[in-house]
Length: 260
Ligand SMILES: O=C(CO)[C@H](O)[C@H](O)COP(=O)(O)O
Image 1 (cartoon, rainbow, N blue to C red):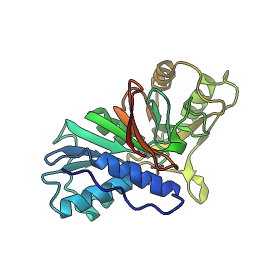
Image 2 (cartoon, helix red, strand yellow; image 1 turned 60 degrees about the vertical axis):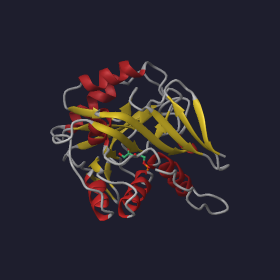
Image 3 (cartoon, helix red, strand yellow; image 1 turned 90 degrees about the vertical axis):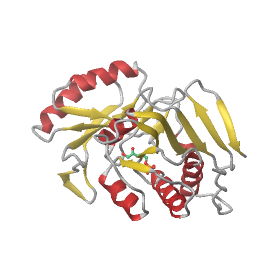
Image 4 (cartoon, helix red, strand yellow; image 1 turned 135 degrees about the vertical axis):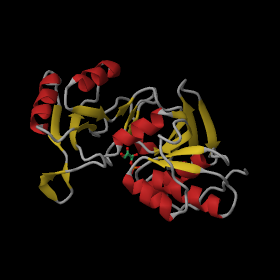
């Protein structure tokens, strides 16, 4: 398939323009016949639109998409992407998704949209997982840009689970946490696609301890379903910069200039 033309940019690209550029370049990696993991969020939506467009034009054929959220499922249907799930297609060729933060080792924080559990299942089943971001998402330390590490918990006694999480990190300066609430209604907990709640963990100075150890400790708390640190999962990240440059960085830290 010929590479997609860069989408038109306004003279001063907005953050959304950059998300679109990164997404379009990731879709250049899609080939007919692939099983695709379809990400969630404002960056991933550009990839969905592009894939739908290429299917309609006949450039991409026999594509099957596995959506990482009910929102993505609805959008993918609306743009004509045929859908499946992991029960039917347990191996995914390529997943494309955004992230809230990406560190130099391609560890991620995901889940601001609350879809972390399905994202982790589908992206974990993928032969290749390409992350698409604008340059503001690149950080030196996870948590360092103020993004929360979301933890999906079962609703049963979620205050109890929250207090166990608070105790776990009580020695860390700048740590705080809160139960995620529905936008515009601070009294009602936000509910995920899996009917669970989300507790957001904030590490104001970034996470300086061993990420795998933190991951294991969180997952050991009964009541926790999953967390939004995606460690060692991304194959590469496509980063779009304000200066027009687009770079793909792989796990080994090797950079490939895509454009600019
Ligand atoms: O993990 C996610 C949703 O659960 C998103 O991919 C992440 O929050 C990035 O979102 P956006 O592309 O809107 O900045």
